[in-house]
Length: 405
Image (cartoon, rainbow, N blue to C red; front, top):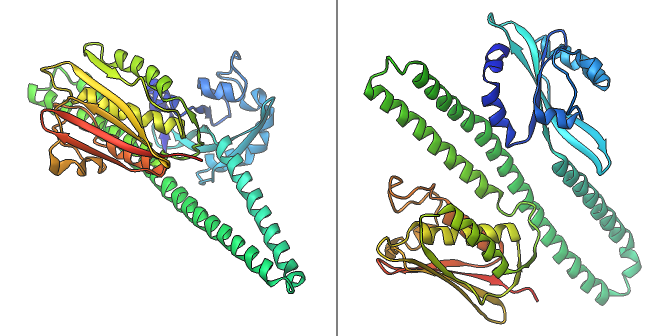
């Protein structure tokens, strides 16, 4: 149960937590009067300028009366499933998953309702599209079965057609299995990361800050230090989970497109100059080819490799980074070379393992997941990535991207 009193007291924190996920929420008391509605929920319900606090919910949104029985069931303490909510807009119909949670008062009795809405339009549309594609596949398969008798006398043509269809079917089955497995794993992981792992971390972090601020005068120096350790550790864990979520999302819904490498790097270098204003570095990338790939993933790939070159630079000289490419009939091979601190030979394969750190976090910040993301991105394109390096002289990361003919 959620205490409406405690939630009101931490609305700013709650807003910060849901803002990045674009989650709309509102609080109702037991009489269905609106206690609070955040900005995102106002946008969803087209109530941007309306005064809604302390207004009767069904007067503000008469269409919500169809959920009256659902509200009463939740206020009676019965668990309910997620509700799919839909609204029509000029650009088309949009969908939200709506969760309803009871809130409690000081004595633990249910005194209201928390309604949270998270948009799932793209996922719902993809689900509809997949059902249509499966139906089309079934119709094609039924048509094939009904036509077999007509081709008895054309064995050679049937045999060729059958082999072709088998190849298509095997390819479709492989892709379908991968998609189902990926969706299951991603759904399980996203749930664990967002609920079972991140929520306790947020609680630890929030209450350690609260304890430090409210009890600062009574805490010893060691006590304050211990609280700082707790906060920093929970923050590191949250970053690790966030990195792992980013890793799991690589390649999802990605579409290939033509990529102008030079323009991409022009933009990235401006970002790096803002990120590292105190660092003097030189980057040469004037003659790089355009190619076809997944733009968002390729941007992450170059960002991570250049960021590593700057982060692990040799402090005794100007950081220099050189990017060039070589082409064959089938592949482009890109090279990212620097004059940094280098990597020992025994670690040159292990650096691509997830969470593999070679240096203490006190000296170099990071989660140890960046190069494993690079490896996954390159393999998503059907290529390979590796590194050659010498301690004190720098490193050269190189990866292949197949050409599309």
